[in-house]
Length: 383
Image 1 (cartoon, rainbow, N blue to C red):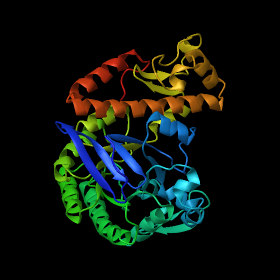
Image 2 (cartoon, rainbow, N blue to C red):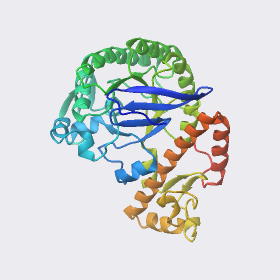
Image 3 (cartoon, rainbow, N blue to C red):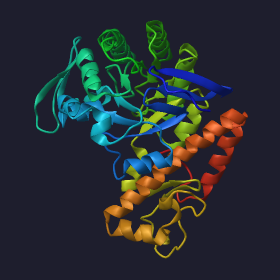
């Protein structure tokens, strides 16, 4: 399906299979096919890859990180250099997170208040203040196509009182973020973020309030932060009925291939995670045969590629023995090739999901994919 160029942001739902959905997010910078996995370009680079490799793997959109880019090189500097798309050489859509998750990890360096959060830079100790308005301003200077409200993300497990406090603060920040976003050019979108820890009633309260604010899209945050997968999936099931059918849904920071398949089955449209590239740098390949650990001695004399039928050169054109050699010698090419292979696998996983949903056979697709994983070094994806 093709769409005429647009100057606005919209979502087209093209097919459903039970709760699973496939469709298109339309932006002035291009169309995003959903379900979509967004490679993470934290500091304006997907680690170890050229952007033409990212695009060739099938990615329509990448993610960049507000917190890291505000520290260096600085949002104002990026704006002077023509914006993030020009700066990093990526012409397609970019999503930026608000920095809330990264600030959460700075527990010893930050102080929360109703107004926002003050913190010390982990780079040089400089003091910063990040408010909902400033988070939106930074993302506007970067020029990202999809932006996130500032929220407070708490680690799980936490008390119900702590989850409630952070969720309600995030709702107040959502209102302030939305007002601040009104000054940005047409065609960009701001997503609200559902919080509430692992408490169903709090998640429903958050989702309902955000839906009433009428955001262009909705994120589910505060998951994959220490809770088991079954808790994460239960929270998705709790939230999904309370989010508008006509708006995209983004599960932040998730996850393993199994997480993606299960979340798509529960109505999620967008994902991001550092796992493909981080695992590649640590010698772990994701393939249709499961996870393959190239550090293992069993691969030292194996002439087979990771997947001889793949159209990705990293999976098809290099032997397991060579990849094992690169890893053992700590050559950077090893991490680069495995990161490329993993990004490609994640994109193919989502492409298969889109095709299966359109054909009304998503459950069969999931069973087929999971059945293939048993041939890897580590057949179970969780953990």
